[in-house]
Image (tube, rainbow, N blue to C red; front, side, top):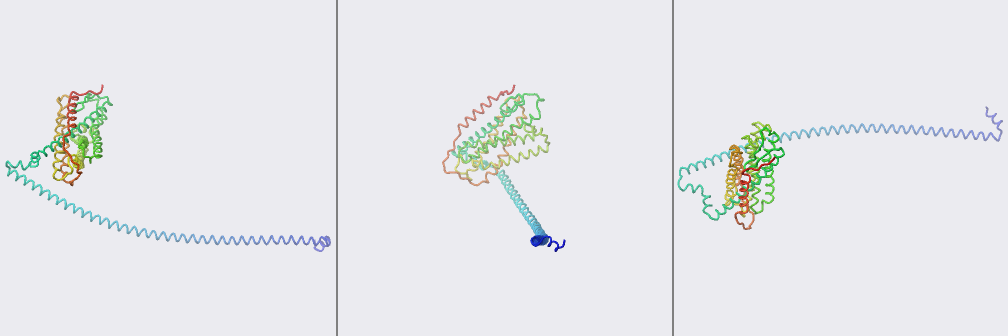
Length: 434
């Protein structure tokens, strides 16, 4: 429809309204169009911004990757350089260590050669002196040889001190052995009851009143090892007790030190003689299926252990002299060694060997007797290192408190009563088991 026609139809009143309405609709449509155009432009601009940001981030990532690669390459080169330097240093250190080791080896070899040379000279000197003494033997020779002992014997005070110290140490030596021996025998009998074995306990052995077929591998290993293991355990306990008050001036602490020695001899002596003679503790080794090589290794370990123990406890015996002296110097060191260690060990071992000899060999054999004697004699492997290392220690000063060397009468009476009771009570044997 034409515009003039609409004007005629609407008239002069409605036509202006119509025109105004159309103008407003057109203006509104134009505004919408402009807004849409503005939104499209904003979207395009935002898209362009995002694209630029993404490109910038990509470029930054690429740059970061390049930087990281460059840093890694530099670190790799630095590590290679450090490894190279460390390798060169290790090579230098190895060469230096080899040179030092070689120098030490040469030094040790030279010291060993000089020591051997000095030893040969000393042996030759002692041998020549011995030959000279034999050639010049006269009535004064024995006095020269036993001059120290004669000096002690001629001096009444030293003679009495030597007697008291020796008897005290001997009494404690025997008491400590009997405490460990009797307890180990009782424990062995108690354990044998768990196998329903009839036993007769004598003062010199345990007799198993059973048939040969009743023995099992388990019972042999347990019953023949319980005694030495008890000695090892009690010896360890005794040395711990001794170490807690070894600096005290009392003399009874020597009971625990001798107990440690007996415990080690009971274990390692049994291991040594059992491995060599295939008796006692040796049955345990046999039932563990060790051959001759294994037994020889056990023997070497036992000898080394006994000698090492002797070297370790030498200072403990030296310190035990604080029961009688205010200081241990060169003048009384030999006196203490002979009176408190050597004499009691030798005489005490002989007494124990005699004590272990049965009155009647019906329940015992001479082989068992000699086996026990050889076990007891292994104490010499502890005594020899003590004698050898006793002179190497410095002088020791304890305190100024006066001391009296007197005989331990209560311990001596207890020992006599205990030995008599053991011989009387266990002479005919005590039966255990049904």
